[in-house]
Image (cartoon, rainbow, N blue to C red):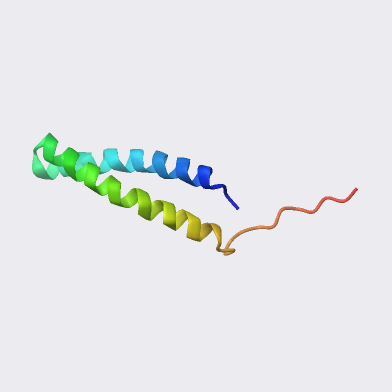
Amino acid sequence: MESHSRSIVKTFTWRAIATVVTVCIAWIFTKDVWDAMGIGMFDTGIKLFLYYGHERVWDRVALGRQKPPEYTI
């Protein structure tokens, strides 16, 4: 199980990368850097919370997880 702080750090680092991509794509379509940045910030605000929730739900799902080996002494 991941800690909340690890999920939060992963959320912010991913959103930083995704925001740059969103702003670049919006800039291509709008041809206006301020509109593109506004779209990027709006997108980021919404998706930060969605991604964090997604991470926390998946942390409870056992699908694809492997159990750590048991050590005996």
